[in-house]
Length: 400
Image (cartoon, rainbow, N blue to C red; front, side, top):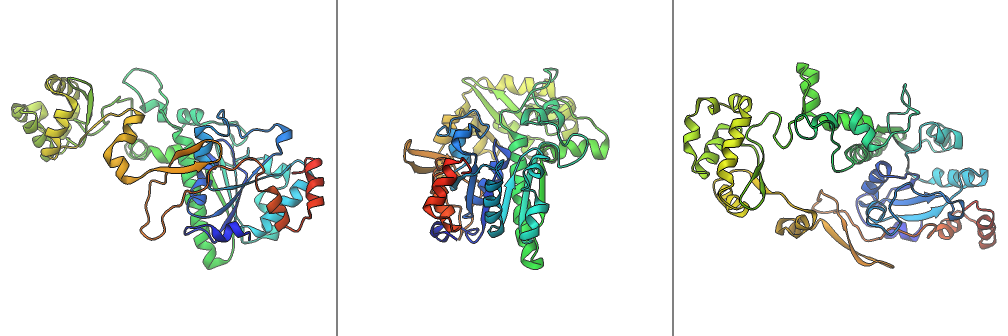
């Protein structure tokens, strides 16, 4: 264990991990470990081989910096037997290996779970794939947008009749990474009882379906196929985006009788309470189009801020619709401290997106910027017993 490992902070600082991931889903899983103190070695191909991480973003771009903080970085040529041998030495000493190759690649390289667990039976091996490690689609290339379509999200996103619409974030990628990290943590906990590692598998397709939640349950339980509802909630009305005098606001949760009554009173539209078509939640859902038109006709008479103040005083759930700069300028966002300042040797003082969960005694620690490629190769190889001359030779032969 290196001196840096001993100095890492956080509840996972006693663990180490080897990071073979690229793109987004895998690095999202790894970030959950590194932010909580795990000593993560990011393993990349030697620069001279010209193999990129796969993101269109440059290494010093915002996406790469946000994904790969809190790690050390080494280079290994896993297509070279000596590179694989070095990797196996590292794997024998580590707790977790994470990868998101296509399912057959790790077996071809000889860095699969079956191989590595023979010499390290305590190893937790985590794989993220597009469609799973086996099955009819296992070898298909898959990306977030492909899975948003296959997982049903694009059929329920967008305005009615608009046609398929992708979500504005990488929902399948990010959720697959989070589910994978959850699996790794469960496996580490279980290992404390059994003493044995195991193979954790997550896929974009499973994660996407899992994230559908109640929309998926509507089909599984009632054989109801959800459609596009636009900014309206598919089952809770009125919930949606309403135009105001100077913009738009969100109103939510007004399907309950109590909040529906509070909404009408705050809008000085008590007459709506006596309209039979709006008297119950099912009827309001059935008659959502005329109801929303009526509400918006009232909403356009005041500014967004005026409505927000009125609704807040009446305990009606509402909120502004922000651009990204406004998100981080909001006083509640600032209070929560989710924009984390960090010093970067080239970029200077920057901010990254912090962990959206807080622990009272052992919070996440984001204090190391994304390392340069191969920044810690010499340090790691020395820890494995290689001399400086041997390390120089490995570099010259593009093994590292």
